[in-house]
Image 1 (cartoon, rainbow, N blue to C red):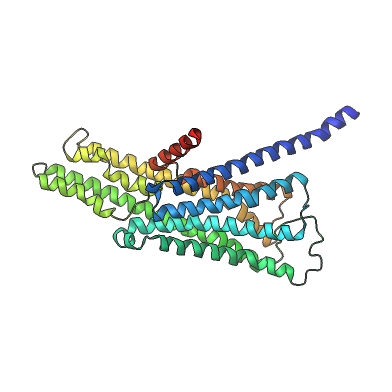
Image 2: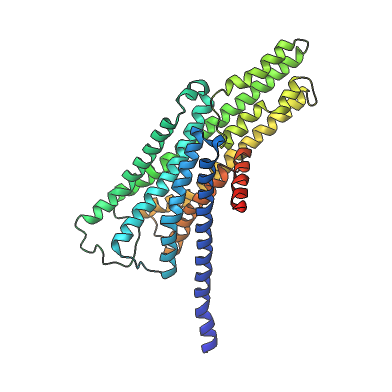
Length: 364
């Protein structure tokens, strides 16, 4: 009897060890990936562009999640109770809410920056400065603080049990605050992001169609060299704003329009037929759609379940177990690991800068 009982008791402990190891690895990788993005942007002059400063600020925010929020969550899950006292608990919850909200708002700011860059290119090129980025980042942090501070102030005002608990959880005792925080931190930013990326895709598709139609028009008038030249200028004027070397969406949707294959087509070289032009534009449109799909899919998949749970629990519609809450919380944390991959890995400049950074470390 003792053998089976002993083995049965060991299984949950073994599972917990595996979970803690896995979460610790995720935490470490998140910190390393975001620190690599920060160092790459700082050390690469080619990446010193306003749009990249938004990427860097996002990486800083996700790095804070990795070093200030995720380790204490791993400890809490491992010990199954809070051991660090009420002050650390309150600080941890506040930092958690602030950093995660700020990370989401950074994604909203990046989408807004891209939208202006593609729909109002010439005018926004003059406004796209480090000061403009600093204002956007300041607004994101301010909104995040305004969302995370109210529960901290409320708990300090007359809570007799303050400091006498072994649990450190976000309380759902005020329905008004639950609605305010979930909509401010996620639902409104998500709606803005979806609308902006939809408009970005439509604008990019319009550019493809104009590029393709202008190429076909010039093909019919191939005897005129001036017409061919004007067609090569058209996409440049449409994309005249400063384009970010780290921006996969703009690179995919805009920069490629000026790529060598299309120039070859304009000059009558290989691939100069109208059908091949159409195939190139369609291929790039599909690539743009995949890029947007990955960015939006990762964001929604990571955060939507958590905020649906938060809203339902706050409205007293649903009660989540500790395991479900932990899983959904960490699903959201994983977005801080995915962000540096999605927002940098699509661009060759970032890839080369990463390789250069790794070579420098190996030389040392």
